[in-house]
Amino acid sequence: MKITKLKIQGTYLVELNPIIDERGYFVRTYEKELFESYKLETNWLQENQSLSKQLHTIRGMHFQKPPYAETKLIRVIQGKVLDVFIDLRKNSATYGTWDSVELSQDNNLCVYIPRGFAHGFCTLTVMTTVCYKVNSTYNPESEGIISWNDSSLAIDWPTSKPSISDKDSSGSNFKNFVSPF
Image (cartoon, rainbow, N blue to C red; front, side, top):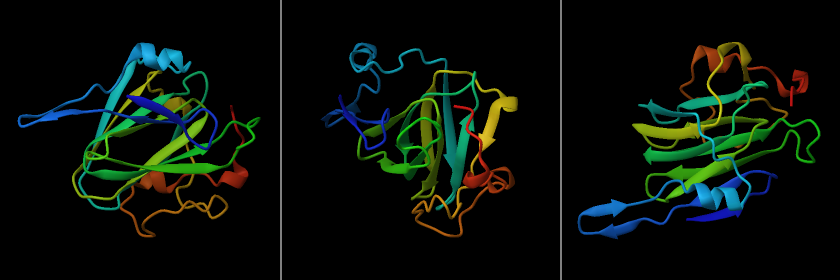
């Protein structure tokens, strides 16, 4: 397993190292001591999984307000996504900046996103399963959503006509967003 810093402070790419033979593979997807050596979260309280059946399904851009803000470790176990995250930390040098990573069942990558980020993804295949660990339990009253297609953020999505829920379509504009972080 290899951990590499991404361009936004606090975000990391985690490269898994599967052992492959004629039977299939074995891969370690998390190692507490390695994460601790990078001073990353190791107290995962919940693991979530989503299945998106359609190509170009967007889920996001979600976040939890403090004290329920979440650090996430995200990987794809079936299919492929463009995983996107926005820095919502008001005192950060990269506040309002977004980054993305392509995660797939084949590339053996995970992304680590700390508290203070909005997160979402767009499926690049049909039947896509995303699995992610979080360090806080979900609290519906603390949920927030930034508009996936906010022109001020100019996120480079692979589609302009996604399959998206009504809830995710009603996200707030980033210019009107007041950061709780």
